[in-house]
Length: 535
Image 1: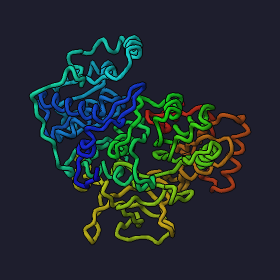
Image 2 (image 1 turned 180 degrees about the vertical axis):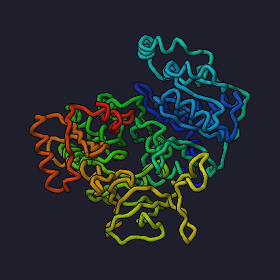
Image 3 (image 1 turned 90 degrees about the vertical axis):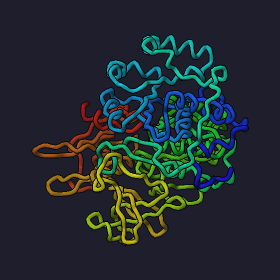
Image 4 (image 1 turned 45 degrees about the vertical axis):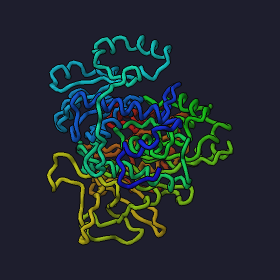
């Protein structure tokens, strides 16, 4: 298939209609492209009979099960706008979101409805249920229904969607939307200002990272290979790279409902995963598993990490594990934000530099400017605000005034996303990310950067990960949390403080340290800083 720049997400995969190549792996199930497209088209017919039309907003709340992916592409075929939600979204936030985006329908995984039943009883939009049952073996289905008997007891089974051949809808035609510039996806994000916003994306933006992914891999074809699809659809990295990028190249996405390193290792061993996209926590869990070794690692081609800032030691340990196994796979860091869908900078086998987040993808432009004067570019090597102009730039924030949008238009009329991130470009064009503008605090009149503290703490042997938290009060200070698996707390704590005192001004040195065997995590594996504060 020619990667026509005018394609929609659905059009990217529709030419594989007769392909028997695997499109999705899920548990013990393999779904070929021909079966996948047949189910997508059948789901689109269902949606049309339910009255869903082009530009209708449909909210999707589900982890990565096949039906969720099928529903997403079915809605894209129609031209509906999909508001992709976190499957663990608090009930009141779900209600707010449905109202904010003007949802006409809600698609929700049957097993998750129980958590929202009370709040959704008075919602006056149709609710349809997705299910994982359709793609489980008989035994898996039996065990799931036994385990989730209470949760599933409240589901109206007449409203559970099915795309099986025996229930194929006939006589209903769906016109395929061909406009890839119109709004098609809404993703919730903290935004570059830190407040929750609905980011509006079009197909042109979402498919961009996948369109240049062969350049990233330095390969002519990815057909028949597979990428990990565990980061959820609501995560730009998960949607654009974990799901769509492999599918648009006639490759597979290996779906996981939630991250389980044991299941992932099994899939790698069976050849179901050839490329990992993950957050640092996921890579760390893999390395801590003794089964993640040996010849099976030769099935991996290239792996990428982002979202959280990784400990530099993670790359060294990961790559050494690969070298020992005779694998060409390496772990590379990238950078992006939801306002640009996902990754816009990445290190690769051809171009990589330690300490950087890589060079810009083909077609992406970057400049570093004075945070107080966006028209003023700073010199190479000097830190400033990162601006990005890319095919992946969002259309803006939903229901936000022009003044609140994340854009800056320069004198040449080029529109840039204002990231509110600080970094610099080096002489070779690599971007070095430092921190977000909001991630600095004043203590005794001095700027204190938690990211600097964390970077130094992570250099100490025995520190798995660190989190520097600003504690406000009459005498504000930094409290440092450390995840530690091996050394005695007192020994490690003293070693960290001694190291920090060698490099930091006294105001930046943490007043206190808490060592934990395991950090609390969000659903996608990021450190849950709010939970740390409650400890």
